[in-house]
Length: 522
Image (cartoon, rainbow, N blue to C red):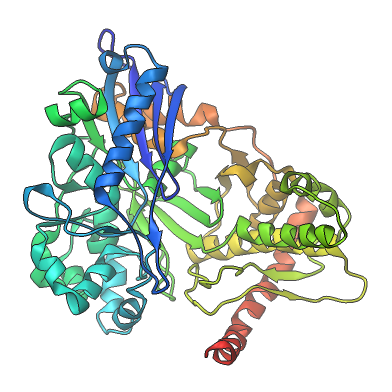
């Protein structure tokens, strides 16, 4: 590890959907301080979800100024900064780097019909083969195609189409660029790590190719902080800035998705949604017949993260706990969510494994991985008069395990080990169910700010503090992993026997979901 005299801090910026954070680390990856502000966006009944670009930059700059209040001489001590942010979305920028309109974020559903139309085209097969990524309404390619059809004047005013992190990087450095991960899963080929004209044509955007910015790998290339940005952030002009990969990749990187020994390692983020990822050599990617998931480049030569994502993960647990809380309230008792969470391991101990099957599609938006069906809904199969709430709670948690197995199975072979991150990963009961469902050992990442850490790791390599990303991972990510938990053999055998029935019933329910949706439509 190398460093310049006095430059002993790396800053990772992570502008998420809910919170914008600036996080300071020392050069060995130890977290020093965090400054955060809530992110602000607007939703409408028509599916719109957007946020003002200027406000997002102002909030980001504020977090950097707030960070300086916690760390003496932060500006002088900062060796480099890297920025990541929420993925997808479309942030149009025009003349003089002024926003054309508010940024469409990944939650925006206005392009849903456009996504459906594009998926039905004959060119979809080749597009999916190049990107490894299924089409959905949150992606820039689909959103631009929707704008092209409905509001082409917006595109006429734009000079470049950016993602959220790209917009922040533009304000930090004056450079209109994007990173390889988002560029390739939206418009490119994960094998060549570059734009693919056939993909752009499949989206109907050949005439808008000029809106796509240059691709820059922030683990190799930096740009200096501008004088204007220095005034706004309190950092020193000329400080090297790296453009991080998309937040999902940076979080996986910080959580330890890459195993230096080349073994198949998974990384699962257990949050409101569930992200299931495997680090693979690009030539080892196995794409599923349903045409779903993502392939996102890692900042490691020849390596990608193959991803499947459940629309709802812990949201299912929240729903089940709300049932208990509502009943307690009806009886005049107040029970906190924390109290209910503390009972989960007890409920698991009172119930039999795989006694019920639960499909965890509790989100009103249905499911997106490893299949796409906006009409998918949660269900419990196998109830009888002996089942009680503990059995239901176990089924819900097992449903998350089966859904994870469904996602990993769509990517090929199951991983030998899964690194876990997200608050729910710290539940011993949930972790044991997940390990047994996958038949894989699990390790919990203890790193609180994995996304910001992953971004900072890229800056550490780009600025020569480490000779390679593998060296950086060895010092930053690997030590933050907790002990390995092997799956319980008996429980793993029970779940392996039950999973085919889970999968068969999931497929059989599709026409039932259609029938329910038709009855509920006005």
